[in-house]
Image 1 (tube, rainbow, N blue to C red):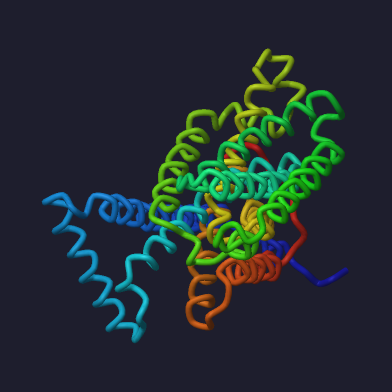
Image 2 (cartoon, rainbow, N blue to C red):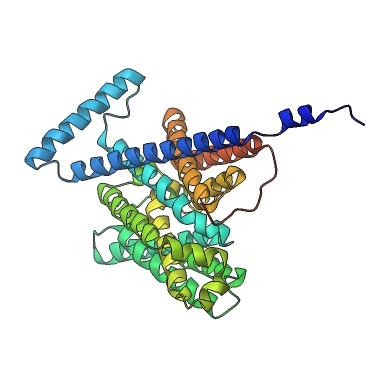
Length: 358
């Protein structure tokens, strides 16, 4: 006998109305976070558009107003950052990465394909190496990121081709593509060493100076493509993520949607490598999703929280990078890991199975 009365047990039992209120507040907070993230991303996209069209009559006035706002922010915060367009374009790329990387990463993590991002990053590095070789040998002055994008997409299709002919998404084809593409990249870089002034370390470790106006605009366009692709195929991607065999039985084009997912991953990786670098880019596909999985109760909630955590990681990482003069990639990833550890502490319990509903 514990001396506990039925009235005591009734008081300790969670009340349905309180549970409903807590769920409602949680949902409201998540939607507010997603809304704020969307606003920040829209502002950054607007800046990239204004920066591109600043010579047009109406755009020039709006661009001047944006510059004035940046100077006012510097005066308010005591910084010398927001008045420079090059910093805004770098921050715009980072903010967009904080949206699209966790968005795609949510499917990759739950499919146990976390290393695919690392593989495609190394493939994109081979693309940068190919672009450098072409530039040095022909005098072509096009964007290295476009070459990296083309090679990255080809690498994604290659990974998909290998996995379809081996065990489904086994480690072997991914390891082969990861090591092989990086080996090709290093050979090409070594062969063309000294022929060009491209900062290879910036692409390896991430550097705000690597972001060019063309690269920032490319990231803006790629972000819109990724968000639209996920939105239009969300149900299908969700189906193959949690039950691929049932999706095949339902005669869903599983191979096609798998290919779409890896191509979207390649697109995200190429855009993100500007600020994160080849070595660290996969972290933004995985770490925010891992943090969200600690506290989320459904897959949809995981996606919402992953995007919010990704945005916090990017903004916090930029603050560390700019304030201490450290590389942007490492700063963002360390901040993301801090968010992950905080989510573990905040969850207060072990992770439960994620539901595909809600």
